[in-house]
Each structure stands twice: as structure tokens, then as C-alpha cells.
Length: 458
Image 1 (cartoon, helix red, strand yellow):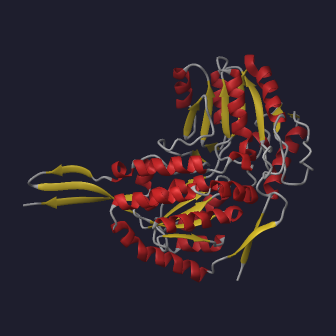
Image 2: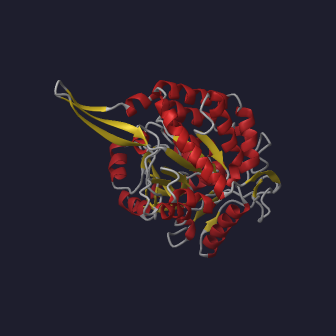
Image 3: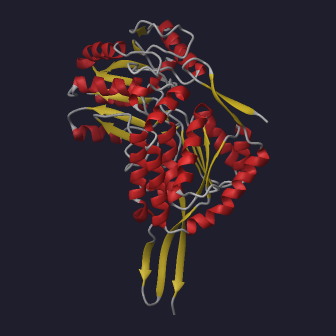
């Protein structure tokens, strides 16, 4: 039987190994999920909500373990305490709005007719979850999918296999039947086969553009909906009236936190010319103050990147930019030997959009900063990207922020904040970021289908 090894970014050791399901075993898992789904959907909505909330409580009992396990799997420092805060916020909100979101739309209920539109579960929902925020990204879909009456097959990233197991343990302990929530370890070929054979009814994928294309190709001709969130090259714009210190602290945190491995992390910053020099000076000081090191150490603020190949790509983009005339402001830190997973946080100036570091997703602790002369120039540069996930505007003028936001090609517009998912707002994107609608009440529309009833009473 084929095995997959999870290599810890801390020291390159094998953290754990798991058997990969054969195609036959994966097909059987999907068949069991399909058979179990109607019984789960027939339970009262209130019961499903209660069980999902209980699973969240169970996860909350193991936050110390969560933080240590995440450090071993993907390198986030233990000082940040795992992901339970965002995890339970999202789960709780989706539970709170479920009854209203899933209620029938009554068109007419008279002596003559009952006309209504119900929301019914799609069936088997496959969640292909990423490693960078492995609890929070998975729960975005797992919680509302189960609440809506679907069964769920979770395929977690190879870098965070243990997270899928912990989620399965919690949901089963809370009372979800074992065939209704299954965590599976399967390869790309088997994943595609499950989709192309219509063994599942809905796919939610978070990952690379190439991965999203593979999902859509597998689903071609099946009419299975595929929801994708494929990352971004998210910009920040600092207007001349911005609070400079707040902009530096928040945008740099949005660029560097989690070693820059955030789908909605800040990768490009455009600063109004009058603030540019001061912004760069403060941004460089902010990055230089980070403590790069072993994520198990309490004083570490910046851990390793999750995988050596990610670190190599970041270093390559920085080296190319410097060779093309950019200035790198942060000297190489002690933990960074130039070849390992520990990457020095970097601030680049003298960058242009001809450089990959300002075009391709870097997904590392690097940010390029450019001066701009006007809102129009900033908007043009912010839109000059094949991605469109979030954009952050820093200003004291709310009306201006909304006007600028209306012209941006993005899924979410922030003012005076960044790198955050509000569960009440739709998480979505455009262009190569993909398509879909996660969180908010709109998530329930994605995870169910409308079913119309036209009942004549006499």
C-alpha cells in the first residue's frame, strides 16, 4: 500500500506517515457517504446544528495540542495558540444563521395554492482543504455543509494530514455518523476519479491555480459544481491621509504573519508619495524586529515555511527582483542558511510589475513597496494582477474608500484592516483567484440546491 510522509518544516524529519486509500477504497467511502446522507438530512435542522456546535466545543478542549501539532506540521509558532479563535467564530456564525438561511421561500400559501422554494442538500460534498490555515479553511465548508444536511468527505493537504484526523475525531465524538463525515487520504488521480465519476455532488477546493484547473477539468461534463479559492496577490494602498503607524503595523503583519503563507496576505503595497519614505523606514524596522526560529520556542514570532519547495520559490523571486534592480532591506537572519525552510522576512523597494515578485503569488514573508502619485495610479496598479481576492485601502475617508473599492477587481475590499475573514460576509474572488461563495448566508445557497413546489390545493 502506498504511504505519504508528512515532512516537518522544523527539521526535515518525518512527522507522521499515513496509508493512501486505493481507488476502490475511496469509491467505497464515497458510496457509504451517499447511502448515509439521506438519514442525516432527515434529522431536524436544530439537531444537526447542535451536533456541529458540539464538535466545535470538543476542538476547543485541545487548543494547546493544536498549537504544537500545527508547529510540527506547517511551522506556525506556538505563541499564536493555534486557530481555535477563528475556527469557532466561523462555525458559530454559520450555525447562528442556518435556520434563516435554509428556510423555505414562501411565494404563496392560500386556500388555492402552496408555492414555495426549498433549499435541499446537494448530497456528498468533497472538501479539499489547504495546509496554511488548516482548521479555519476546512471549517468554512465542513460546518455549513453538515448543517445543511450533506455528508462530507474531507481530503486534507498532505502537509496537515493530522488536522483532518482531529476534525474527524471531534465530529464523530459529537454525534455525526461515521459515514456522514469521513476524512480520507487519497492521491490526485483518485480525487479526480471521484469527481469525474460523479461519486460526489459538490467540490470545494482551496489551493493553487493549477489544482483548481485540475478540479474543473475532472468535473467537465458532469455538471458538478466546483467552488475554488486559488489564492491571490493582494494589494494594500496607503493614501496620504492614512494613519501611518496603524497602516505599517497592520499591513506588515498581513504580509509577514504565518511566514506570508496566507491566501489573503498582503504581497504588494502602494504608498502615496508624501508618506512613502516614512512608510518604508517603519516597514523595514517592523520586519527586522521579527524573531525567526523554531516555532516550538515561545519567543519565536516567525517560523519556517511549510515546505522546502515553497522556501525555494520565495528565494528565487527575491533573487530575481534584486538582479533586476530592486533593493532588499533586511539582512539575512541567523536561522536562514539560504537553503532551509527558515526564510528571512523581506521588504523590497525599487520593484516594478515587470518582476515576478509583483506578479506571481509569492506566498512567503516578502512584500514589495511602490510609491504612487494618485488614486488613479494606485487603482491601475492594484488591478494589474491576474488574481482578485482582497484589497486593503488605508484612509480616513470612508466615501473615498468605497469609491476606490467600486473600481477594484477583487472579492473583498477592506478599509483600515486586512488579512481577515468576516464570516458574515461572502468569501469570494475573481479572475485567477477562482469562483465560489464561502461563509455568510450565501454559503448555504452554494451547498444546497433550490427545489420548487407548486401545490394546487383544489
